Amino acid sequence: MTPSRRRKKKSSSSKAGPARRRRPDRSRSTIPSRTAAGRAPTPTGQIQIDLGALRRNASALNSLIGPACELLAVVKADGYGHGMIEVARAGLAGGATRLGVTTVAEGLALREAGLGCPILVMGVMDEAEAPDAVTHRLTPVICRDSQLEALTKAVRTTTRKPAAIHLKADTGMGRLGLPPEECLSLLERARLAPELRVEGIMTHFAEADAAESAYTAEQLDRFRALLNRIAPNRPERVPFIAHAANSAALLTRPESRLQMVRAGLALYGLLPSPSCRGIVELEPVMRWTTRIAHVRRLPAGRSLGYGRTFTTKRPSLIGLLPVGYASGYSRLLSNQAFCLHAGGRAPVVGRISMDLTMIDLTGHPMAQIGDEVVLLGQQERDRVTAEELAAWAQTIPYEITCSAGSRTARRYVESPMTGRRG
Picture 1 (cartoon, rainbow, N blue to C red):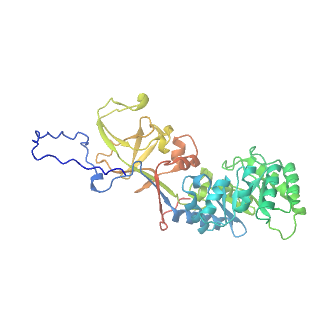
Picture 2 (cartoon, helix red, strand yellow):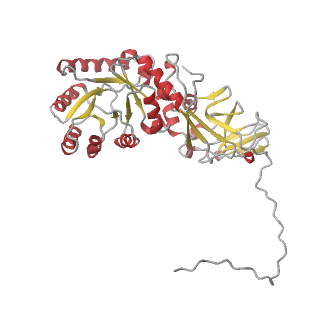
Picture 3 (cartoon, rainbow, N blue to C red):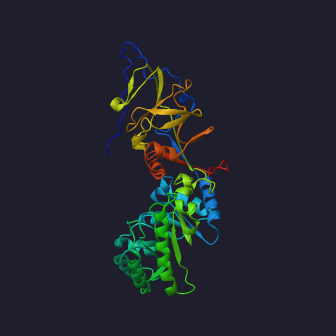
């Protein structure tokens, strides 16, 4: 047995050496700090997810589509970066009847969280995943014969209850799905298998967010023509769900709503395009904040950051934020984006690095270490929107929320109804 370590006692006869002079602490900034008052920030900040707002968004969308149409809440990609499990529960509480994911693994995570509603797996189900899909009552979207065969075999060896499936028709997206003629053939083969129950059929629009897109109308016409060919051969009193509309289509093209819509971006209070404004009132769900980690006073003519892409034109107060592209704050926002401090806008200056972002606080002379800075969301009367960030980064709002705060803790809140945005 290893003996415990004992601390050596200093001999009383030993002479004490000369007292060491304490070195001055030069690590403290001359800028006042607010973190000393018990407001120490997390390393990179915080992302707040308003589940009350998400629930109200689902309810508003449900009211828009009417009782004859189902609302599927799309919670793939960790709920567009908002947290899949939490937003799934809030979406169902707001009136969604189904959930949509991309992978079987996402569906299994929802089942493990205790969610028992229908879950549509809209991505490519690998044939090896068929037993899990069947056992956990996931509804895969099918686009090839080998998937039918794998599901049929899985039913025979597991539940022995017919597995629900949806088929996907490619009406012009050019990704997943089958051309209408091939889709009809696959449907007939699926109906011959007693182990399977064809519950629905879907298609996906390529440019529903384009306000005057004739192509979207053409896709919908092709899908309706396919549905008309299916209808005479469909058994009576057997529910059949046809769905095509994503957020953009459900907002701007009522004729595309059919039996179900798939609400993704709109569920999170974001608009796919300006043409979607004014149709329904939605509340942004995500708010991303950080705090000033350090402040520097620099003279005019000083270049900042990698590549020296910004040079101060006046004596400047520069704030350093502990976020960068490793946290999901895109490098493309360099010298383009604005943050909020004390209710006013502060521009991002210099190149965003892996862990740090610089902002110009010269117009905010009272700025201090520890002050809140909003990267996305509202502060006082101003708001930085995901649409703005997307425009500055030359991307789309989807990418902004999916990337946001990859190493930042999420905090879930239930807010009362506040001002909405349509």
